[in-house]
Amino acid sequence: MEISKRYRRIKVVAYTTIAKPSNGTVQKAKVLLKLSPITYKNNGKEHKVEAYYIKGLKGVLRHAAMECARTKGLEVCHTSDKTTDKSGNELIPDGFHPLCSCYPDNECIIHRIFGSIHVPSKIKVWSLPVANIKHAEFESEHPLNNMHVATENRIALSYDGRAIQDFREGYLSGEFTFFVDVTKLDEEEIRFILESLLYIDTLGGGVSAGYGVVRLKEIVVEDVEDIRKLVKTEDGYKVVYEENVRVINV
Ligand SMILES: [Zn+2]
Image (cartoon, rainbow, N blue to C red; front, side, top):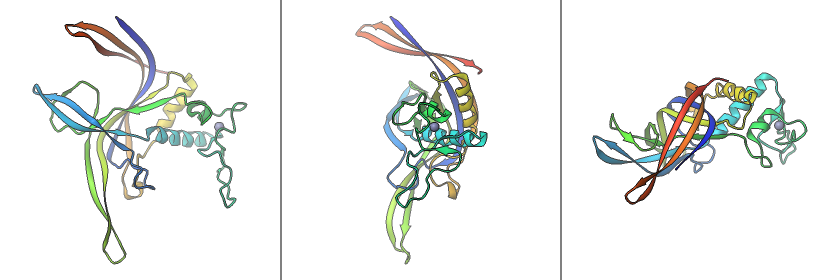
């Protein structure tokens, strides 16, 4: 027994010297999430390693898309639906309109792709889990980003040099792959996302101190056939996953 699903995605291979995937303003708002450990094999021996997930890539892409639209002179949704703050200051800069105010009569390209509270997004953005595997050769059942992951111990000092707070911040370094599911987009929207990707230059916090610089190394539009097979075993069935990937151009 076997089923197959087709979808279209953009695969992006990126590199960062050092990134701290936290949003910088709130200490606890970490976006490097700890996952359950990943099992891999080296020389037939099984090992376990800690794994993480990079959150926030969709937000990074959305900001890049807003910058792309602004450069093209397209008026698009801002991230806020409010026009003024509590003190009456204007919140919406030139080139933007309040979130969702364009919908449904004059829908902008950002709303068409990213949606709002009222309309679901047409894209999905995800990355492979990050694991720090030190063996030069390894086999893992699931695809992953093998990156250097470490923790920096930091101390915040008061004016007289006393330590007032100790904290640890995770960071990562190396090459990583993420995907954008663009199955629901038309060709114009896919091209807009491709161009928007070029505006990505940072990830996470600490940018002013030189952290989080991202360089994209490879962008591929792929047509994916996701196959699931039920294979009979002595104990019942096991599910085998396969993927056929075809490179396409738009
Ligand atoms: Zn809009």
